[in-house]
Image (cartoon, rainbow, N blue to C red; front, side, top):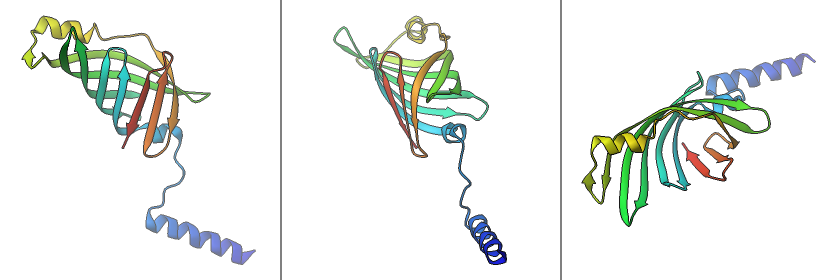
Length: 151
């Protein structure tokens, strides 16, 4: 018995000294900076998303889409909230979107179009399935849009 206790203490000391982490919760795995990409009905959305432990997200994204035969490129900032639910789901709600800039076939678009691209920002909460590991997160929303994120 004493030998088992000493062995357990030794393993714990080695784990502590080498920085081996205790198992993380799913929320701990979500929190952090992710590089994400998604093929949506409106075009390809890609960029950096920072999921914070307080349940908020800040994102810097690029939307690339074909519009009437032209190429639209819009640079967006978004703020949202997130919450893990039972059953392998995540609930997210976009609180605001700002279009920093946008071009159509390389030509800058006016401020009025940037406002239109941002689309008013706030949206109703929506649920997605979530598959999660330390290095990859895959979200699939109710419409089947798949977002793949990596670290």
